[in-house]
Length: 97
Image (tube, rainbow, N blue to C red):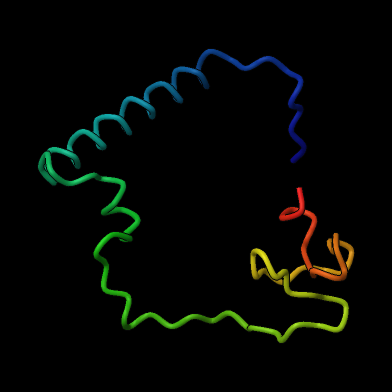
């Protein structure tokens, strides 16, 4: 089904979104009350600070530096040759600026 994004929205859609926004705010307030004042709800949702990640395994394939890439001697990042600013010093355009 095609959607015409140029048509004006109707009032019932706006009311529904306002109701759901209010419901989200209420749920967020309830969750914050359950956690207490000293815990940030965003930290617990993301699970980053103090999380035990020892059982996690990365599934990223790491490739060696390719023939058309270089490692910047300033930032130590691998860039494409098109980003090379100084061939003698092997510095990328970002670090030379």
